[in-house]
Image 1 (cartoon, rainbow, N blue to C red):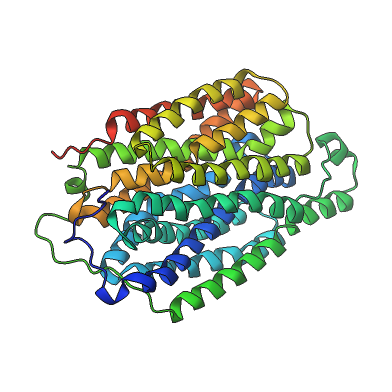
Image 2 (cartoon, rainbow, N blue to C red):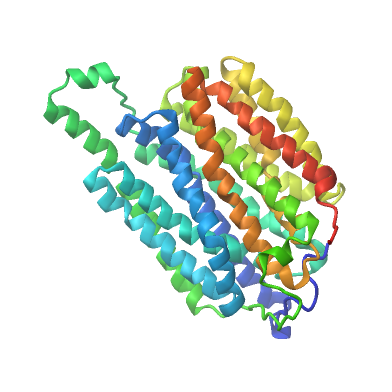
Amino acid sequence: MALASPTTVKIPASSAGKTMLLPFILVTSLFFFWGFVHNLDPILIPHLRKAFRLSNLQASLVDSAVFIAYFLLALPAGFVMRKFGYKSGILIGLILFAVGSFLFIPAANTREYIFFLGALFVIACGLTFLETAANPYATVLGPESSATQRLNLAQSFNGLAALVAPMIGGKMIFSGTDYTDAQLAAMTDQARNAYLQSEADSVKLPYLILGIVILLVAILIWVTKMPDTKEEGSKDGSGNPLHAFKHRHLTWAVIAQFFYVGAQVCVSSFFIVIAMKAANIKETVASYYLGLGYGLAFMGGRFAGTFLMKYIAPAKLLTIYSLINVLLSLVAIFAEGMITVYALIGIAFFMSIMFPTIFSLGIKDLGKDTKLGSSLIVMSIVGGALLPPVLGYIADLTKNIQYGYSIPLVCFVVVAYFGWKGHKIRTA
């Protein structure tokens, strides 16, 4: 499957064969790290909701702070990639990632919710650079015919992060103690402040460790010789978003990715909340279901999807998986008890291939618009900022978190259409 025309990107001949392996391993590690920090957000949402006594709508601003950065930084990140290459973009992303992680320490010390949102925004700025670079970079580090499978393989390590991050985060962040508003009101001011401060402080260590690891990865990539793409001059309007949107399949990919990311964030971010409400389990137990259940299903789905794409066209598989998730969303909305939790785990399995598949189908045959198309698809991740607050609003309005999952249901309908017809290449 050709993702870019031969004139768009050029990998040096000396980079062929085994010299591609180390760069691909390093790039693949980035998928794990940004997956790790993203899958800490479902831990942060119920934790900060408890520490700051937030509503569902207020807690959803965690997602908004993260994914609004993708919208604001995607085009600048794409410009950096076109001007200086993928490696420079990756290094900028890793530095911002580390700085944002370290900002969790002063945020916890001040115990101000807005500072946590600011730290998350800085991290997300770094992730925007990483995803804008790493997704197309993975597709060109090897034969064009296996680009979609290679991107899904790299994204599988994003799934591995979905497995381990909730368990590690839940272990390090959750205290296992949750007081009601009445119990807090009955405490002395000193005892209440001590409890809330301890809840805020519990995020310091995991994010400090994460920031140090990310800096070490940045140093390793900096000293490693990596192939880079060279974009040749263009006279066809490349660099103009309106010109890029002449590709109808790119337009539909941007729409589909907006709704897919919104669905994924809604399902994962409120997983613990809905598990606690629908199945009446504790937050620590719910975090293990999020990791061993949701995370393992997501990771397994990535590997299974990569295998199945050898026999089923990626677009067709995307359509089938989306329709299955429409049915599972109905179960999550109307079922009771652990069936609801199992439905969410099933959704994780079937949505695991959606991001990389939409991405690779969307940038197929874009020619010199490939890097700009990549930026536009990454910009569409803003769906993760806008749709979770809608879920939170519905949950607060109806007093039922499950009704909010009508939002992912609608999202999967849109993705199914992209897999069915929207992905077909049409150029205006």
